[in-house]
Length: 376
Image (tube, rainbow, N blue to C red; front, side, top):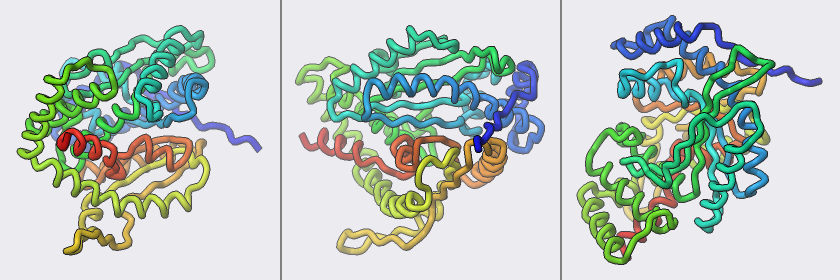
């Protein structure tokens, strides 16, 4: 028996969504604005249909380019939306481009292959005959953000005869290489554990400078930034100095210790959630995590059995149920800064972990590169 998909439709006009953005932007307690949150949650959830339609075609293109890829999708966290509204006073919530999005990471060991695959995918989506066209393409590899962030972003504008109420909704695609993904993961992970918004360019200036230097060195290694020996040596010296200032080695090592506990939880979850679990609601409790980890005198790590991370699966036709539970957990996360939640979809739990390794404190690739740069 075929299961009918229960898509969410927009229940409010764009002018209502715009007014909701203003209410949330100016409110001291946005999560207590019941009606505004109801509008926001519906507006976000309604974007899932456009994303699923666009992703289906782009996924086909990507799989034709390379088998070594990770594809995941996510719904933007309300905390991130509120931060963006406050950072950009003129931003219209009804026109926000990344309320939903999906990410494609090319994972070949050869950086040149990954870069070539990105170029090929960009060419395919730019010339595609799909109804929903790319309305904006930004290459942050050629011109990285000031933070050092690098990837390619494509914004699609949805166009459908069958679902006219969803027309003009926007969906964001991020395309990254393996190295670029490891950098972005480290920024998000450190931000989570330092309770700062490094990803948005906010927080400790030394950490921000540390990641800018790492991005330059990683881009040299990847071949997207031309450099001579003098510049490279100068960057490494600056990295060694800033790393000492922020005690980067120790701080990154402490984060990776959390990964010991999270890996155990991940293995338990993977055994229970086989195949495609549909929507996955992730809840990471940083407070429970750090209380369950101890290090012995000989440097070995002992982790008590715990479940600091939980993943709840929802069938593909249970989007409304997933949305309601996600909304409840987001309010909990707002009240408890140690809790992080994510509503995402992936082929399986392993793909989810590869796509969002920050929720598992997995920054091992980044640490290896950092240590190599500092020691060479």
